[in-house]
Length: 315
Image 1 (cartoon, one colour):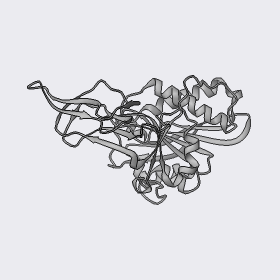
Image 2 (image 1 turned 90 degrees about the vertical axis):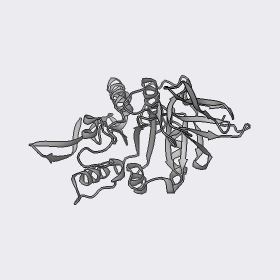
Image 3 (image 1 turned 180 degrees about the vertical axis):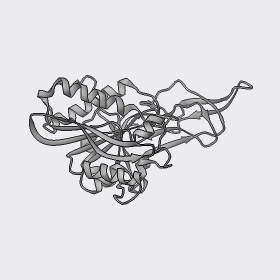
Image 4 (image 1 turned 45 degrees about the vertical axis):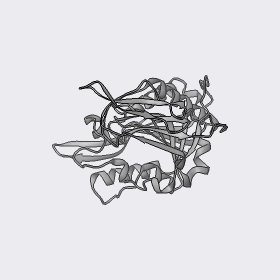
């Protein structure tokens, strides 16, 4: 059942509408929401929504409870391939919980929060930006660690990054929901403006696995090569930044263990054929972020590595 959560008048007799698809099983009262499209240039969630709706509709008899699919919290951004809300110059994930008496964007945010509150779980799906590629991961506020890490571990992702509270913006959808007692896990994966099919299928399997654990799904879950994620505290992450401007060349993909001193890639100068800088891992650890866009400037983020001890059982 398609439901319009909020519809707002736009100029030239048009409307901004935020819609969700409610898929109900014949039994059960638990409710899970899959939310994405907050940033218009992050597209992985579109395929996750499609695949979830497809699998649920094909095996509706296996569903106990209610699944809500929200593919586009920022439809104008998706239509125009912009991260923020066009014409408002706003990042939508910086205006929650919104304001019912505020601007169009604030009213929209408030309506979304009001509708999602009370769900048993909200999964907020993001991609990375155009510049970085991320392994499938959950990002969790340290204040919510005890509740949310056990949930994230069942979602077939590779990495759980627990941020210090100071690094988590209070105006995000996830923070606003978690502060009201509605559990919300942020998932990030892939790269901006693209869809990695394999990552999306993995997350769908993970969501169904989580639903089975919650007593919401009795159908098939593909557990082939199911991931047991690495759990990381924020202060154990090394940030690698470019020492010079140039073109970044690498053969590595994120989601691998690198050795201390291992070459991540080269920053080169096409004009002269010179190598300007070697990007080298400062530690042994798990490479969960790597530069995807090759043009870099001094200080550009090249990679993030979870530094781990050799006897750490996470490796």
